[in-house]
Amino acid sequence: MTMPYDAESETSDEALLIRYADGDRAAARALTVRLTPRVLSLAQRMLGELAEAEDVAQEAMLRLWKIAPDWRTGEAQVSTWLYRVAMNLCTDRLRRRRSTGLDEAFGDGVEPPDETPGADDRLRQAERAIALQAALEELPERQRQAVVLRHLEGLSNPEIAAVMDIGVEAVESLTARGKRALAARLSGRRAELGLSDDD
Image (cartoon, rainbow, N blue to C red; front, side, top):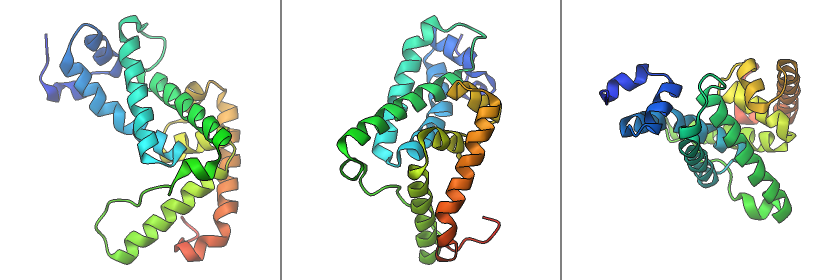
């Protein structure tokens, strides 16, 4: 039985995935609307480039659809599984970049936010986003993953531990070291970027 689209928001990811595996297209649409923006955001933070992030999000979702018929209920959360796949895809792309050279592969970096405050505010937001992305790219890969998942994607430490396949203590350590490294990299630019001590 196909439920109205509005009712899909109350259905768990796992239930939607199982319904998709049984041929329910509305469940696939609901799961896509729910999960794709989160995976895209994660990939963009990890890769710094929207086009590559879109490719990763699409590939991760395709892998989810492929595994749907074999999904084992109760073993993992769908979102955790999807984050792990996306992280692995990002890691593969980052490794390929290193072999071809960052300058050739990276492009211009993060696009500025599409908001409509004044031009000065938009410019400052864009400068902050670019500075943050540049600082993130300088972090060791595992620290960057932990910082992005915790502070930019809002996952809890246990969720990050599941995504990264490490212990909660390791997540806490990676996140703390990553935050300190980011603060050190951005410390000389606080005034230039218009950051207060609270930012």
